[in-house]
Image (cartoon, rainbow, N blue to C red; front, side, top):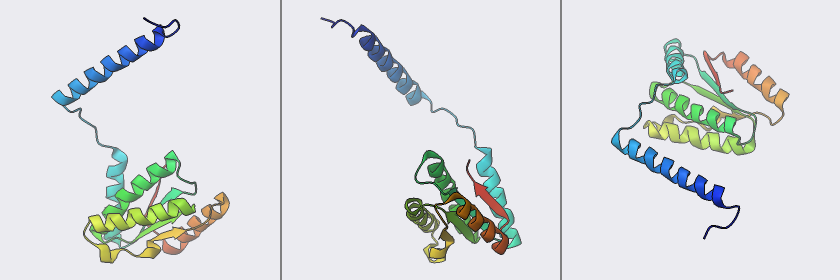
Amino acid sequence: MIIEGRLISLIVLILSTVALYVGISKARRKMPTLRPIEAFDAIGEAVGRATEMGTAVFDTAGFETTTGDTMAGLDVLSFTARLCAKYDTPLIAAIGHPNTYSLAQDIVRASYLAEGKPEAYRADMVQFTSEIQFAFTASCIGTIQREKPLHFCRVF
């Protein structure tokens, strides 16, 4: 017996189940091909150039707390930190929120550990700046002017 007003919900449930089953069966037959993300290739090239020139790489995940943009920035930081560890390139990461700061420290430490160079990790690679937007920006600009890194990375 179908309760009045619940017929649409039943139809949506059945359609969702069928779509899920079809998707899983297609995925088992052949994995979909994923195209490479050109931005990650560009990061690799920039880290290589920084290594050749002997300069640092500057990366920031932003000044916000753990939002979607910041989490994407931390993922890019992880990729960049692994490349820097692999090529022995100095890394400077500027973070603007205390919660994100501790995450970034763990991500960079894990990246250096994953590349087999835990002794190359330094705690001062990840710098806490400020939660205030303009203070964060001023700190990043000051770091860029002082250190003169070749590569700047920020996810928008």
